[in-house]
Figure 1 (cartoon, rainbow, N blue to C red):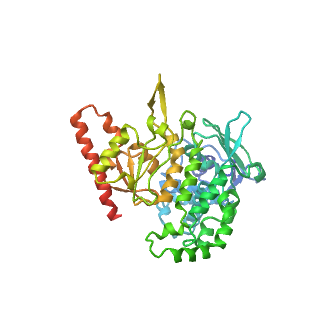
Figure 2 (figure 1 turned 60 degrees about the vertical axis):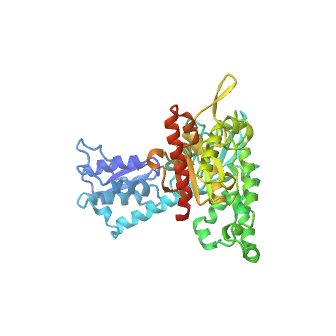
Figure 3 (figure 1 turned 120 degrees about the vertical axis):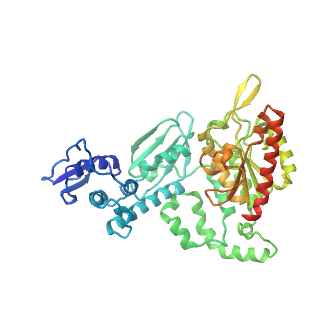
Length: 470
């Protein structure tokens, strides 16, 4: 018998190394004992030897590697033995992972699916609450109870999404701590180690109550997607029992007063879209998600009718926008106003906002020179755009430039290749990509500037025409 002791329950790298050595030594699965950390060892087991230079002697399918990465994080104590058995069988049947009817493959796929779902739950239901550190800085602390060993595997998501924040994620097994530059790991914690709430939650619960839709609530589906075990982490769920209890009465009242309304979803929001938007704007006014709030004069939130079919998303406020507190009022805003007018679009009928809500600049004497937001700042501010789109539900969202496109799609987009056609956003909404008006201001050649302006106007016309087909 051979025994393999892994240092941690999610140590997939150690499992791979041991599995290669065992395969190279032709050790059958029934001759291997897999154990974790300080678990009692088999007195008659031998340690695996290092793999020879020839390694395993066969090429492992990519599908198996992907399956193993997920299934190895499951809590099933047999997961590593099952994966090694599948690896052993792949020597003679290299396409076995394509056979989804095979009992072993099917079982491992179910483990992997459960892990992926748990990863999604952590990303969706983890809530940070602010606490003040001894040096006066703000740290955001969250508590989460994962179903499987996903915390370390999920760390990169939170580092990328909240790169500019100091945060800690506490779980019963391990804790993660990010100081804005480095990620460290600590021991597990208790639920009482996490804060219960902060002042922002009152604003957030007001916002959630405003957008709650009693006409569309399905309790069974909600519990399946958001099990009760996560409710204690989320401030908004404290409202759910009361909102559910009054849902039928609210729905009946809406039907009685909404006979002449076409957009039933907005009526379902209790007629409170404006109140929800105002709560969101007020919360954004105190945003500290990234360092840009420190030198900026104020948050510059979106503006326009809340039932606008078109939402324009720019890069960030400029010098004049920062002082005025309104988007697109500077030189680029003047180009924007002229272009949408030439495209037959009334600015008063469109909602205009920015991907980043604070002005990023470099001081040059008395002047403040625009500086491009980096990926971390875009991602930190992305939450506001998502909430604006959730409230407004525009028919078409127009990304003005690369920063806006990255904010909306969550990845870098090539403007030249993607502009001028309908795109599908991650949430299923329709989008259109074009250049930012400031690009036209930077063109030195008058002929080129005129040509690009005409192309920009055609883009805007195309976006408006495409609304009829989405």
